[in-house]
Image (cartoon, rainbow, N blue to C red; front, side, top):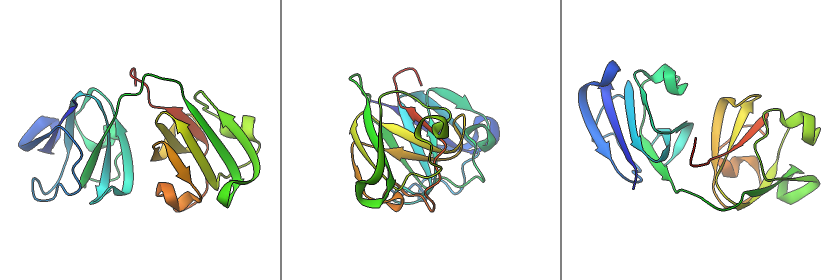
Length: 175
């Protein structure tokens, strides 16, 4: 089980709400979120209800203000606990929608995707094992997108507005 605590004010002050599992709408529990304490587990928090909007990956740590989790504002409306995965990791990425064009298999992190894949965009992917995060910029920066095991026929399937992916990271126990 995971445990995450949301606080309305910076530095873990103000009204708080504790969560131990997925929550599709946090709005009834707090109006704003300026700090978070992750006591256990890996989490993805979302700017909008029902796991929509900007996504932010959080692991066991204290985040005294929303800038520490790379947040754009103090709005957190849903959260998802990411199950621990102890097996291998495997994902195929494709240059075109519906698994078309050039394909490359990944089993490890990649901070500079263009150096290996030679394309600036990913239009589809198939996550066979493990949980992954796509990052908009190199070296695990920018917008983040959680990818669970499954097929993603187009970039909108993982919640992106564009096909730009510049780095890929596995979600491991040590994140």
